[in-house]
Image 1: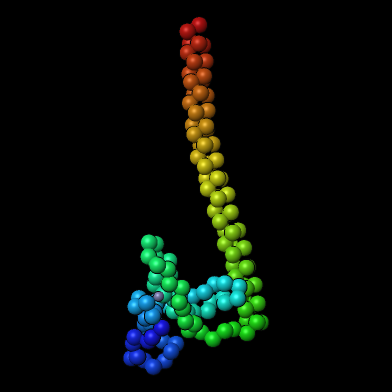
Image 2: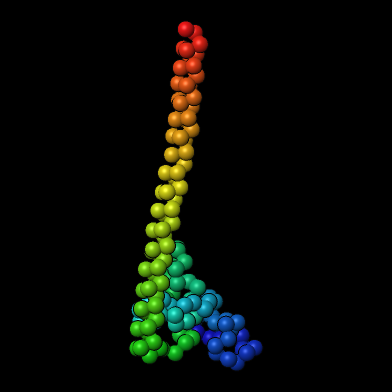
Length: 129
Ligand SMILES: [Zn+2]
């Protein structure tokens, strides 16, 4: 890959655009694999484009992390994913509770209607006597 813009010589500058050897821009991406959590790289824009020849060329932007940093980030990501799962389950339970409340409100309305109807019928029966 070659560097298109050299306005800022810093290799860590996000505005630096890279071009793959196949001529396509290689946007800055972030890997989230166990072996490279959060490690940025320039990946060819043709990597996942359907119907075209796939190009899997890439260049790392960040240095490889030490094993301890990988382990800590891995654990944090695991905890984050568990928390996301818990939040999702809570949201589903909340929606289920909302639906139950809606159903019970409808049932309550219907019960009130029946109660009033029976009461009116009872009073009418007494008055008719
Ligand atoms: Zn390419």
